[in-house]
Length: 188
Ligand SMILES: Nc1nc2c(c(=O)[nH]1)N(C=O)[C@@H](CNc1ccc(C(=O)N[C@@H](CCC(=O)O)C(=O)O)cc1)CN2
Ligand SMILES: Nc1ncnc2c1ncn2[C@@H]1O[C@H](COP(=O)(O)OP(=O)(O)OP(=O)(O)O)[C@@H](O)[C@H]1O
Figure 1 (cartoon, rainbow, N blue to C red):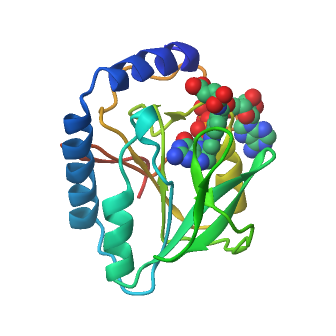
Figure 2 (tube, rainbow, N blue to C red):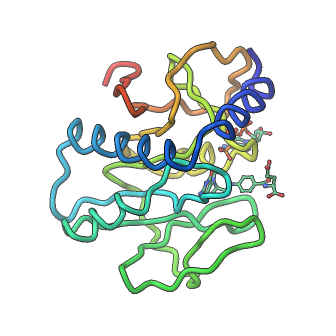
């Protein structure tokens, strides 16, 4: 199927989930993540600040877990067509941008080019690790700017249909974590 078709279907599938399901699935996703990857003190995690209205995988509890465990947390902030990566702390002030996404108030780009994990939002990921997001290519651009970072998608739904029209810009994920399973792609 095409990205456009999959984007539509998986938006609908998300909408059909209750808020309770979203919370429970999100908890299971991060339980699986923690069990599968051996997180260590001082590691760096790049992660999105989830938007509940869009029924995204909830990241707040996991971010709090990282703060407790001394794991460094970086979040994306939109700057034109690109993302900067801002390090956040429990006291960091957030504001909602014009797309309804929470972001740090500060524009202090960490300039980091390596993260131990980049936890990636998506609408759909297929069995090759190709992903469909909101369609602006932000994460594909971010992936070209970082080195050696494990790209880990999170989704409520496992791979099903193949994405037919992945193009040269699309950077596949290394892993996908769902409430039931962790999928590994490629040679990793
Ligand atoms: N929580 C979260 N933060 C994130 C992302 C994400 O998917 N989730 N991103 C992942 O890339 C980046 C932002 N990506 C965006 C991609 C498209 C639009 C956009 O065009 N919004 C339109 C239409 C929305 C729609 O299609 O429903 C709008 O709000 O008018 C906004 C942000 C960075 N931060
Ligand atoms: N590295 C890149 N440099 C320039 N343009 C890019 C790059 N990656 C993607 N694009 C452009 O961005 C647009 C959207 O890409 P795509 O449909 O893959 O988005 P997406 O992966 O669904 O969205 P997102 O990454 O924001 O979640 C396409 O027109 C694509 O050509």
